[in-house]
Image (cartoon, rainbow, N blue to C red; front, side, top):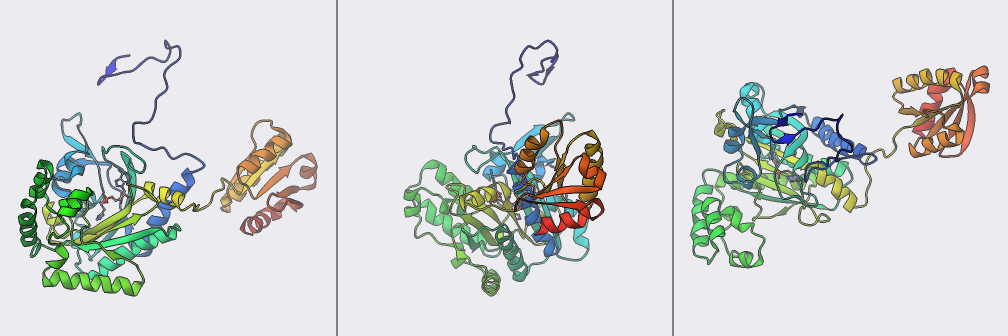
Length: 437
Ligand code: HAM
């Protein structure tokens, strides 16, 4: 077969044994039996956001490359080194989304959502793509659930957003994490602070790459993990000590409300996020059981972003939780979340007539919300019961000629190892009670 952009496609018919194909490097598969947990974690996060009035927004997985260059910031690693950017067949430069905030803002501006009631509250989930060096907890396709609240600059909204992220993590049972919080100030105080910090940094004997970083984004030097750089910058001026009165007030109200809400936090004045759009309240949830990739979620305010993308001068705040890392955090805490079983009911039919009779019964149970599977093929009672066990079913419904004649089903309670004959018409009620018990 012909070459497709350098990939030779081999005809199936003339191949003997074709080589297998692995997933691209750094891209995880979520497979049973773990994959239901993935789904339940993601859905729980989304559900938490809906409880606070955030509505789902479904966004494209790729966007015009300019959106991220302008929105996320060209000096960030995410934009300068990690984007999956390519020309499509019409020679337009498109990029697989590395994050969600810029896309949400684009959609809000494009569809005038910001012309209605404010704040616009949106939540989203799905895959994001960053060409990072793969390691435990750092993937090239990562999964996030995020929220954005756009159009109101109110520290109570910041508190809601942060408390919502915290509630989401609690809702899946995580405990071993902490919330780090800081304020990055606003346009009225950050430029002056930036100069002050640069003045400080330029006097230090930094290596060339770090000096360059100090020129482009001096705040990032404060986040340098190398002990020698940390030592040199120990007395560096900090943004939290140079906030404008308005930013200071905003931050004080936020921390006060978080205390009222019982959301524990530590102020980390050196917290720096990997994206350029942040202003004022900025935060990260850090899990101690995850090694180097410890950020399980993060976010902050981004008051200039909408204007930066050609929209109104409206403020915004949001977060994204990393689903992959939250799953790893559950593992690190030795916790399971959600239903671990595949089905509630497993049907076992002895013979063709019984199979015919069993299938509609299972359909009726499914219609009542009960998860059912059955033994296919000719497995015999013993093999079929093994299948029921493996599926984690609460009960097996056994139907044979005798049961058919009497209009009953033998319901084997697999937890208590008991059995009862149940009239077919009473089956749904009976099974519902058994499964719920
Ligand atoms: P972010 O901190 O870049 O923020 O990503 C959020 C979360 O996604 C991280 O805390 C982490 O759990 C997860 N994550 C990021 N990169 C990877 C990776 N390579 N592998 C696995 N997980 C990863 C944002 O994306 C912002 N858009 C959040 C936001 C929303 N800020 C305001 N609104």
